[in-house]
Length: 423
Image (cartoon, rainbow, N blue to C red; front, side):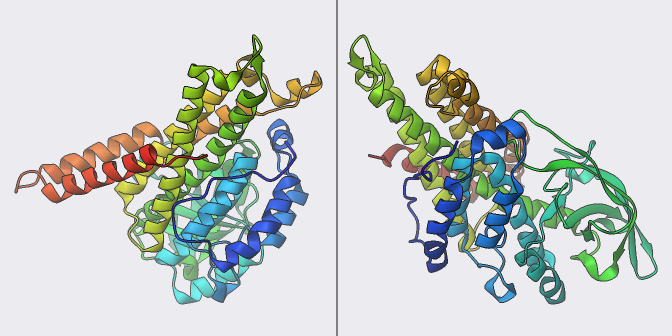
C-alpha cells in the first residue's frame, strides 16, 4: 500500500543520533513509494526499491563508520527497522539479516577480516547467515555440513535450509563441522560449488529472499575462517541473540500499523448511526492495542539500550522476543476482529470493489512469522526453562541472584506495558 510514510510512537530511550536524524526524512520518502501490497502479492521486492535503500545506506546501518558504514547505535537501528517493517515486514528482513554479518565479524572477526569484508558490505554487497539445516533447526549443534582441511584453506560440503538473503547474498557466513567442531566460514557465493537450489515461499513475510543453499567442495581460504576452529556455534548463537533484539522493532512497526488502521476505522465507521469508537467493547480493544504498541515501544527501546551498553544477555533477549512476537500477533488479531469481514479480506479484493484497502490480513500473516523466526516460541520457552532449572539446581540450592534478576525483568517489562499510553 502506497501513501504517507508510517507514523510510529516515540520510544522511551535516548534521543535519536545525528546520523538517524539525517537519514529519516529520506527514508520516509523512499518508504512512501513502497507498495507493501504489491510486494506481498508478487513475493518480490522491486529492484528499484533495493537500489533506493542501498543509496540511502539501509544496508550499512550497523557497519562502523571507519569501514564506510553509518555506524548507527542499536537504538537508532531499531528505529529504522520499525519504520521499514511498518511498510513491509518482508522488506525489513533484508535489512536485519544484513546486520547479522556485522555482528558476526564484530564477535569473531580479526582486524584484517573486518578490513576486508565490512567495506564490501558497506558498498552494497548483501550477506546471509547459514546455520539452519533440514536436521538442524532448533538443534543447531546437529549441523551436518562438513568442512575439511585442504592446502591453503578448507572445502565445504553440505546443504542449508531457510537461509534469509541466501538467494541474493554475495557473502554467506556458513557454519560447518570441522575436525575441531562446528566452525564459521565467510563464503563468496560466486565461488565454484556454491549454488542456490531453491527459493522458499511462505505464508507471510513475503518479499524476503529465503532459500536452500548447496555447497559442493566450495573452497574457502584459511583467512576466511571467522573465529577459532570449533567456535562456530558460539558465534552463531551470539549473532542470533542480536537478531532477536530486532524482533521487538519489527513487531513495533507491524503493531503500529494495526493501531493506525483500527483507530481510523473506529473513528469513521458508523453502526446504527453511532461512531464505532463509542462502543465500549471497541474502545476496550483500542485501549488494548495502544497498550501493546506502547509496550513494544518500551521493549524495543530497552533491549536496544541494553545492547548499546553491552549488557544484552541471551536469556533477556529471548524473553523480549517471546513477548514482542506475541504482542504483534495479538495486535494483528485485534485489528482483524475489529474490521470484521474487511479485516479478513485481502487489500487487493477491497481495492477491486472500490474500497480504500487496508492490509490487515497481510499484517496477521506477517505477525505469525515473528513467532517462528530467530527461534520459535516453543524452542525459546524450552531454552529459558532449562536455563532456569540449571541455575536453580546448583549445589548451593536455588540461585537467588537469577531469580532476583528474572523478577526485575518481569516487573520492568510489566511496567512498560501497563504504564505507557499513546494519545
